[in-house]
Image (cartoon, rainbow, N blue to C red; front, side):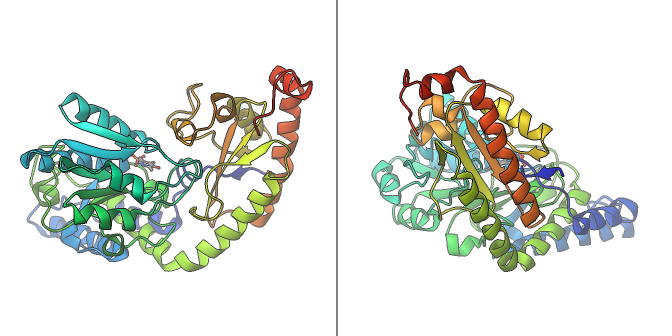
Amino acid sequence: MYVYADNAATTPVHPTAVEAMLTCLNEEYGNPSSLHTVGQRAKERLDQARETVARCLGAEPREIYFTGGGSEADNQALLTGAVLGAKKGKKHLITTAFEHHAVLHSMKRLEKQGFTVTYLDVHADGVVRPEDVATALTDDTALVSIMLVNNEIGTIQPVAEIARLCHEKGVLVHTDAVQAVGHIPVDVKALGVDMLSLSGHKFHAPKGVGALYCRKGIRPEILIEGGAQEFGRRGGTENLPGIVAMAAALQEATENLPREMEQVTALREKLIDGLAQIPHSRLNGHRTLRCPGTVNFCFEGIEGESLLLWLDAKGVAASSGSACTSGSLDPSHVLLALGLPHEIAHGSLRLSLTADNTAAEVDHILEVVPQVVEYLRGISPVWEALETGKQAHLI
Ligand SMILES: *Cc1c(COP(=O)(O)O)cnc(C)c1O
């Protein structure tokens, strides 16, 4: 059995999305900007996709801007908030220390351009406190960007509450909802955010397509010059096959949401209960304030990287954190932001499930992980030091 349990890195493309994409590739090959019938048919497909995405988020079609993925949407949102703030003389931005690098690196760039950024500490449970945001707000604050669901540990942030208190002070709010859309209910009006990012490949659409929701009254800054596409805010011939596939996948996810949330949550709970039996292990992030599918554990005395390789050999595809950093040996910035010491943060494992996973697959994971952990501890000098009392257990 081989179990794919790395859905927070990317998800398999669903047949509905493939089918939508294929009709587009085979028949609707037109350029939506062309005036002839073929072009206009493509334009119709584009409009329909925008309506679908808007409907699934409780937005207006005019508020949806298609992008080349979640990272682009994050970049565009942050630049937009910063530029709008600067026009009013406000040059302070607030985010958290455990955002995706698309947000963190955009913030670093804005710092070089003269903005000041506050990186809020995250509490040990992986949840940002609204009072910490309130305390960080100043008269100079232009934008607050806080993710809805963390990609490494799965915790859900109180974004609606944060948006309310920011708006009282006239501060714009962006949320990176890439790990939330398609997995938990996301309604832009209920959240009350000004901007929101999403990415198709995190909910069973292809890679390289995403969207930025930007509420009426805010014009996104242009990252890509080139044409009148996306209401003049993103140049380039639209990725129609990708966009249409994303709309189909989002519609499917939205229709199945209540049932799938229940199903995936049950799998997750079984997984957490099983992994918690491993001695000197620790669940990272709040037990219940989390999206249905994501589980993150630390196991003392072992290296995340060797764990992953052994799990892969035993038929489990997992991750040690974000796909973007798992090529490096640095511990995850997310786990460090929770206040975990380096030694512990090194031995982390992220398993992320969707409704495609089965109870039998969870059983397989629960059979294999304890075996591999025990094996690796058996050959680990760190574990030996812990067991002989030369070093104190931290978990
Ligand atoms: C995957 C991810 C992104 C980046 O999306 P891409 O479409 O891969 O660029 C941004 N933020 C979060 C939270 C993510 O999980």
